[in-house]
Length: 141
Image 1 (tube, one colour):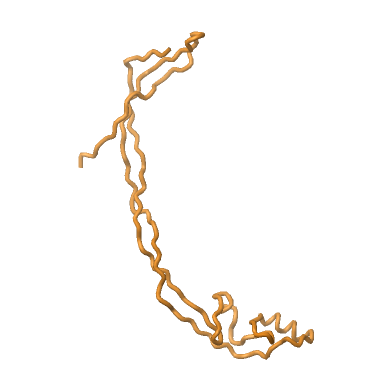
Image 2 (cartoon, one colour):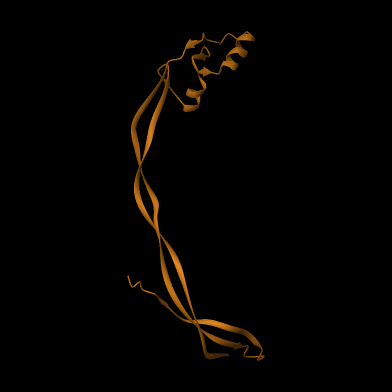
């Protein structure tokens, strides 16, 4: 059982709505080459002026090359000068959703004072304002 009184309270609140916009973003593409072989940026940065290779052809670090050379391993190639080249390609275009603004929608809530009783025992279960009516506030500008 609920008693509703004429005592009321009016509150205003807002809800934020993010507005997104699709934009095309250009990402630069760069390729790295050492002695006509495409390599990663990390390997490109780590090699200064000399390329160390195993006899089978893959690049190894100077420390690994020295360790294998000192141990007498026969699979060590001869160091060669590094010719480093970077190539800038056409930038890659990607669509990206970007937050452009945040709109606020304002609402007015009318709450009335209520007293709620348990129907079987008659005990008071709830006391306070409960919303009865809600409407959106329109912008005048």
